[in-house]
Image (tube, rainbow, N blue to C red):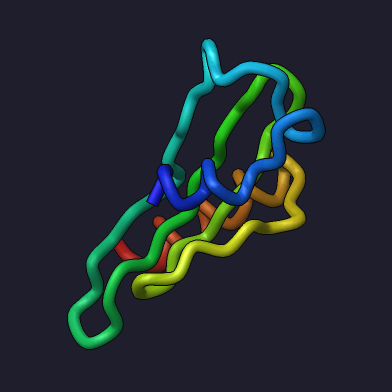
Length: 80
C-alpha cells in the first residue's frame, strides 16, 4: 500500500528526496465481507500526503491533519 502511494507522489512537487520519509497508519483493518480498509499518511521533505485504502485500491485524499485525525478517531470508535 505504501509503495503504491509512493508511486502517486511527484518528484519535485511532493518531495525532493525520499531520505527521512515516514509512513504513519491511522488504521488498517481487514473487514470480513468488505476487505481492507485503511487510512495513512506519508510525510516527505515537502508535504504530508494522505491516502485511503479500500479493497485493493489506494487513493490520494485532499485532507488536512485535522481531517485525518477526526476520520481516524471516528473509524476506530465505530470498530471497537
